[in-house]
Image (cartoon, rainbow, N blue to C red; front, side):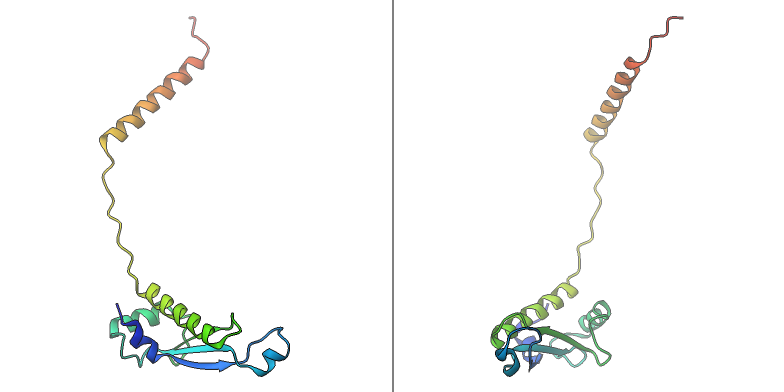
Length: 135
């Protein structure tokens, strides 16, 4: 598919301050990571892969062709960076994955006969519930 290590080298990272509660620590440390990846300038992906990614992830890509992801789950910038890398690779892999086409199989004769036998049995059971015709 693509070389993950070379792809990670093409990612750009920026440390930003996390939002939300956390007191003094949040206000002085940039632990949140913003990962940006320019799909069109990538040397790892071929043209067909770029086209697929741009089409399938059109709602997540900016007008400039950047895939931007943020991670601020942890208090550690390194851990957030690793989480962002794993997520970005996972998103790209799932986008490029081509689902196998299902080939429908023929219904076995025994299954058809079993179904018809059951229908016949139900028909007889319901016929036995009716009032007898004494004419």
